[in-house]
Length: 64
Image (cartoon, rainbow, N blue to C red):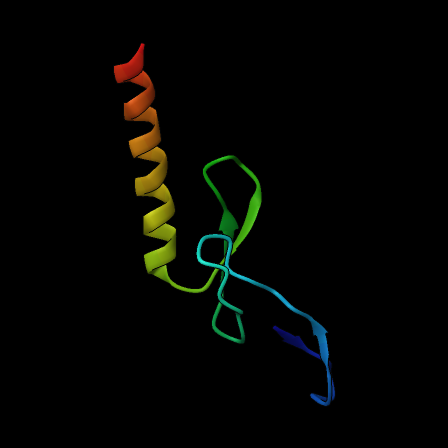
């Protein structure tokens, strides 16, 4: 959630790319696995996305 410069109203509701939790001041902004900008609420969500993509890739390899 991004507050206005004076702090009286919300300018933008920002959610974690993985879990959907509203993100306040503490945020992690980085490029995700698909080379797109992403917003995360914690290191746990960053790690989870990496693990999820790894599991997807392994499943594709096994199915082929």
